[in-house]
Length: 163
Image 1 (tube, rainbow, N blue to C red):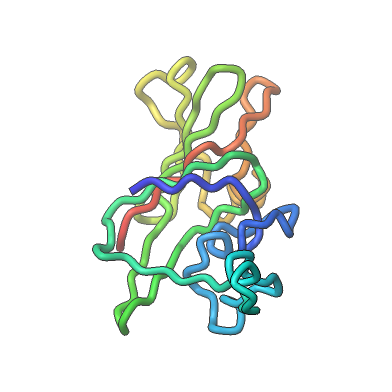
Image 2: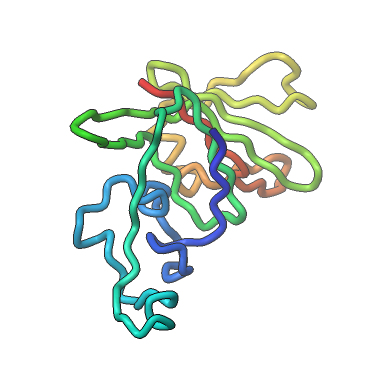
């Protein structure tokens, strides 16, 4: 399953400069948070006033999820949770792909929370240990950027696996 994220804010209205990925997905919002301050444009045309609300439902919960970012305005959550019909699904961050100047690099997060870096042009098939997820996140604007040879690369994809 691939999500393409293009706007910030829980209503995808660019109301925030930087958003948590989990807020944009809207999975953990309570009933009050699922309701917008904006009126439904379709309802206004029918001379009714209703607020926009977020409603999410999955027919099948994926085991593997890729989230595509259109800009570096998202803080990448280490874990995502989705609660449906009393079942709680956990997803954990498994990797991030970065892009800049027609070159991709990646970070892989192993089961212990260790982050490994790979740049095929310089490291080949080898991954370089960067440190624990908490440390790397602090040093990299919450995993949004990777700096390679003084060139900033921004997160293009976040890869999650179901726990």
